[in-house]
Length: 288
Image (cartoon, rainbow, N blue to C red):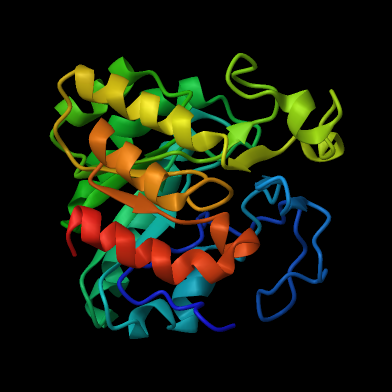
């Protein structure tokens, strides 16, 4: 598609888990969705929003490392990982094993990489308020990699909890926001107005998470509150940039609130012709 060009942006991998995870999106042998229009993703292009309950479908990190595709990338990028087992102890063991696997493979990478620890997927049936308590211990384990470490959150994360993470000295950056779980923040997200229903179209798959234009103002406010706690590490702001309103206003609002960069997700699905302009303007505002 003309203009669908990501040069000038940094690649962040789809979040992987340690082991194979079926999730809600069946995959083919070459890891593409079996369904042309996966039932776990509801796209509303005219409304500027997407609801998804993919649930981290994937083959597990060892399979992905064996493909040797990450290793061949020639520009610095971020891998994304989430521990998804049922208890804190088991999740800690997951990141230990993941760290060991990645450390063994690091010498095969052609470029420096960073790691993003995702604790905010709304479709894994975890309580984010519990997961955020585990972040520092996960960062301690991952610090053995000696690569930059980021944490991916959503706007439900308490600014004071985020400050505790940053005060550990183990976190090099924050990315916010992941999707907002269905029904959360009803004073800010008018769910019935957006979707015309009171029950999620993905209720059978856990409800799903919202991405799109409503997140822009919510993320901007979240960044301000986080900066007010004294956090100084870089913040990457995401959620709805270019999905409906002027992408320039959203980028400038994030920058004024204290963001150091932006991430692009939903716009790639519903406004792909804007990607080139968003990246160029983002680099102009934040510096390359």
